[in-house]
Length: 111
Length: 110
Image (tube, rainbow over all chains, first blue to last red; front, side, top):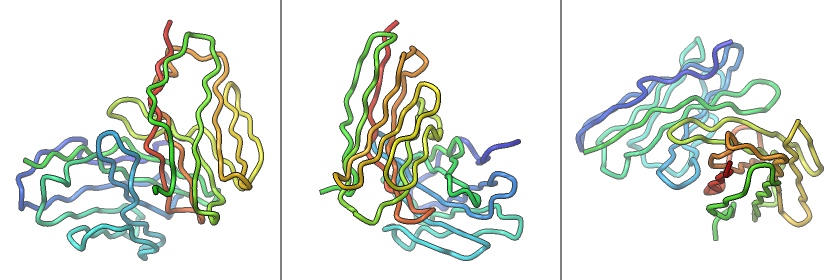
C-alpha cells in the first residue's frame, strides 16, 4: 500500500510569490493534516481537514490556507511568501485507529 | 515555557547500548503519545503509539507514559548504527493536532 504522498519534493520560490503543495493520504484515510518543520525544530501544526471540513488550525497567518477534495487529497497554499516560510512542509493522514502517518514532505526554499 | 520539552542532545552511544530518550509536557489534556524517527531530510516515521498511561513494547522499542508526572520515555535496546536519527516525541489531546518536542539527535557508533 502506498503511504502518504506529497508533491513537489523540492521547490524554490521568490519572496512575494505563491506556492501550492499537494498531498494524497493513505488509502482509506479521511483525515489530512499539514505541519511546518523549520530546521532544528519539531513540526508545527498548521491545519487539519476531515471529510473536507476544516477541523483545526494552528497559529499561522491568513496567508496560509488549505482545502481537501472529495477524494480526500489536499492542497496547502501559501501566499505572499516570506523568507521565514522556508521549511519542510509535512502532510499527515490518519484513519480510525488514531495513528498519524507522515509523508516525506515538500522542501520549500524562499529566496 | 514550551508545551513539550525534549533534550536536543546530541546523544552518542556505542553499538549494542540502550538508548534512553524522554520528554516532559505541561498540558494535562494530552492523552495520545507517539514517538517518531526522522532521518536527515526525510519525513517522520511512526515508531510507537500509546494511549493514556502505561508501557508498550514492540521489538527493540519500549515506550512508557507516566501521566501523573507528565513524562514519557522511549528505550531502544541493542542499538544499531541504522538507529542513528532524530527522535521526536509527539502528543495530543485528540486524534489529530500533535504537539512535538524539538527532537533528540542520536548517533550509534559501530
